[in-house]
Length: 174
Image 1 (cartoon, rainbow, N blue to C red):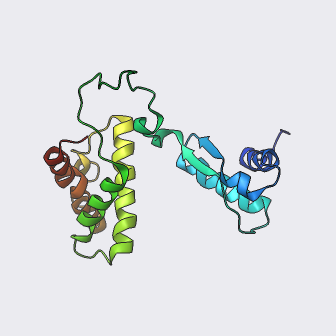
Image 2: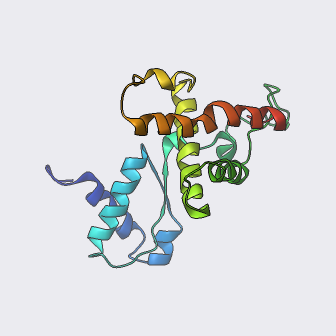
């Protein structure tokens, strides 16, 4: 790769060449990237490469978002649960439950908005878990006399701070 060249543009061009410029072959590929930001950047690089022409993109997965149950790297060979932990809540079930909780909030304008908010809450939960950060002290991040929108945000984040742990406990899930 020449010095000064955009890494993501060069990666998109290399993947396109590797797929023999076949859009269907490209769509079957999976690209692992370090962050969501890198995924968005690669998507934009494919758009630049094709001059904005629509294209079926490869699946782009940020490494920090891979579920252990998707990889099954830590599953014992005999199928027994070595840690005797409750199972993780399935991804779709989690999104549907978070969507329902978001819909119950005042000011959420319909199921489409609630679904996008639910995905953002799921991403927040994942990031907090990956980083080993508790969400219990969110209100301490910004003093109470700061912007009213921060207080509204804190109230909305009560979904993951109070309601979500109760749901997991009721269902005996992680």
